[in-house]
Image 1 (cartoon, rainbow, N blue to C red):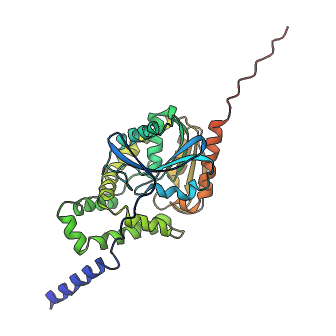
Image 2 (cartoon, rainbow, N blue to C red):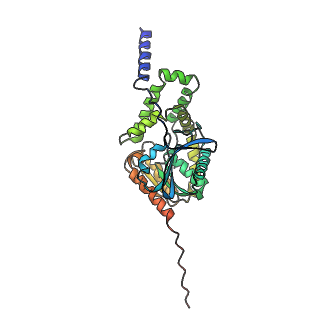
Image 3 (cartoon, one colour):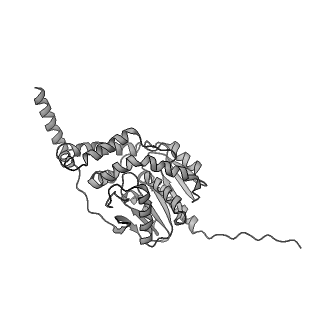
Length: 318
């Protein structure tokens, strides 16, 4: 009877794996590709004038996480990137420092000397690291629920990353996908998405991309490697944050379950001259508060474009 019960349970798992848990087909990419720093990079570009804007998604994510924001920046050139290893960009897991050099190389390829950098979540970590390494190439920082200010990756996330690594190993990956792997990925992705958007509703487009793109083999490799390396990268950024003098606006969800609001407040208090703007809601501000994010980006761009006023000469008394 026990063997029969186990057999029925195994059958139920396989059926669920190919029904409720079945991952959607990966859609065709739109946008452009460029090979820089030895990596094939995918990006979405909108034409425009003035100081351009480079938008960097979180962990995981795609360039399309910024669609609602870039739509509110008409006339402004925007470039939203799939970070190395994510979306349609190649590379699998790419270390933090190489991601920074790849973003710099992509800017050069696109003829961008200086830009406002907008970073969401771990993309905010990269934005801060980029400003520390390439200060002359950053006109402003829009840090949206940025993973800095003491953020650490929890032990449960590290266990999850190790499990992903195991399930993505050769042979195991094929066997797991045929029996239970899709079910596990769908369940964990949906649960994580609910937590990220809470207390707001999950955006259907984001959920579809998460399942169809971020659950592919290369994206999962990038996700696992980055989860395991993120705490060290964040610690390195935090150590240099007081030396970053780029104009910055910190946008932080007051009910964020992934990056506690105290970390956003700490970033704003530590980063010289930064402004803090608390927003009601969770972690996914590019979806839930695109107007606030776009307004911050526009403000930083206008500041960078404003002419520098020469100091008034003092009148000498005769």
